[in-house]
Image 1: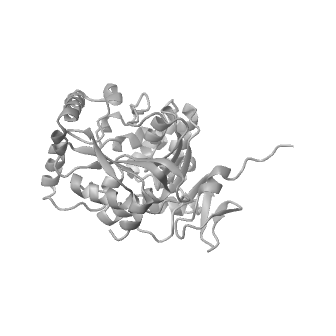
Image 2: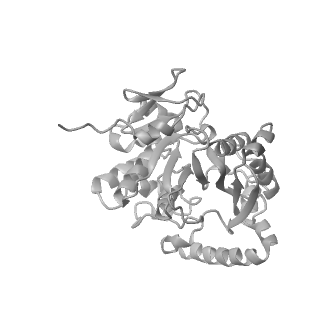
Image 3: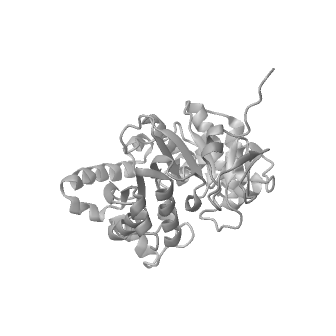
Length: 358
């Protein structure tokens, strides 16, 4: 007798919580429900934990929810969840074409890579030969549990697995999460993925040892960023680490982009720029004691592991960034003009209680 596979990973059923009221969930057919009757569909084993009626932080989120309820299905390749990817109609057609050709690179990733690292990899669309998986800037995981917030197609989730972490990725795009799961399976990584919102993470409290996020929270409005950072504090164990990349107000390239838009604050999915002092107050109040590490100069997301994928101009920027990062370790003041930094906060429940009114 063949035993049917579970509708949802039992580990997720045990550790997920209702994002609307934080209550525990139970499996009810092909959905998860809480005592208040909030219902979250499970799509091909992936829980879609998006509360109804919440304003999205990125394009395509509302389509993730509609698709999870069996609506708004793109008939060309339903298995790729095109409607929830937040890409243009021409790009969706390109994904379908690539999928028809086959090949070692997931067709969704072949297009989502264009938005990886601040649009620097547009030249790789349709020409990607390997997955650009960076080196995770964290100590060896040794089996500790890491949450990748805003995981998209799983780039940093795969990097975390390579460093020895047990990984859960969360992202509001159903199509991106499904791509992440496909790539993880292709590469033999047992990562778990959930569709969810960083502002109301669908997990029980004090679950994770580490929360990592790259090029995500910097796109949020300031109230949404505060909500997301507060959620990191809630789901981290006491003493757990939140490591979050943010764009800085005084980085040279960041100043250029701010000047181009008249130094107004961002709108929609535009990047918001923060001073180190503002970030220190934000993370200090909502997570705990915070320090900073330079991520890079002359742009956001320049990774040494991606050098072979870069144009000659990007390689020069990378080399200059790496030199300045090295110098900044001896001259910390240089970090004030870095374009990208990591805020690294140690979770302290007592600190969160004092900062709840931020």
